[in-house]
Amino acid sequence: MKLFGLLRKREAPVHDDNYEDEEDAPVPTAASLGLMACPHCAAVWQDAQEGDACGRCGTRLHTRKPQSLTRTWAFLIAACVMYIPANLLPVMITRTLFGAQYDTILSGVIYFWVSGAYGLAAIVFIASFLVPLFKLAVLFLLVLLAQRRSSWRQRERSKLYHIIEIIGRWSMLDVFVVSLLTGLVQIQGFAVITAGVGIAAFGSVVVLTMLASLSFDPKLTWDSQPAQATLQDNEMAQAHDNRDRKPA
Image (cartoon, rainbow, N blue to C red; front, side, top):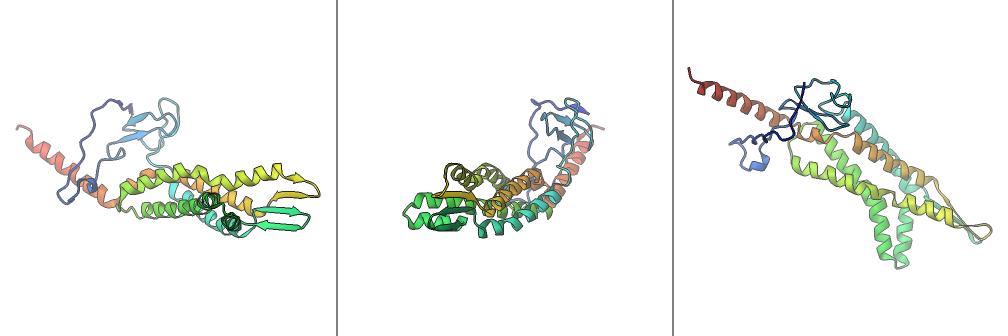
């Protein structure tokens, strides 16, 4: 095992006449070139074996995250289960002299919309309802296609993963708002705001989707069966050509 030079000449992409568009043609992966990166210090090692220790920091090296799909499925299923009570149970309870009011995420959106605060209603609806739903749908798509080793739109799937990594931080908007109001509005005998059970379920959905995103290995997107088979065939053909060109 030796440290792979960062300034090494870039490998030329593999072209295949069977692909009309060059973007659809398979490209060599680090695993197919015998390279393995350390997940801690990012050092790239050549001819390293699965489970070897990194020569720089001692972290165990793996070509792909161990049990990535299994852990991602577990977090996704748990997040889907918690998504239902997060939207049905109240996230905020307001007690005043006139009684108690129980607000869910959608009832809060409706209240802002009816009150004329269209921008605030849109922000809460997008950040608290659409974003978690979008993350769950995208992660399901990525994990399912990665498990089937599909070659369908690999570049677009890779971009989708980066998108959910960027927008995921905005999913905690409702939790921040409820926490702020709970701390500020505590006027005994007039108005008291407390957090409902739904906010705990909503927070668990956000955390579980974050864990699912961290558990998923985006490199699995490129491990498609047709692409790897084509690469192996091209490498074998290139090796035969080089052998035939050698002088006798």
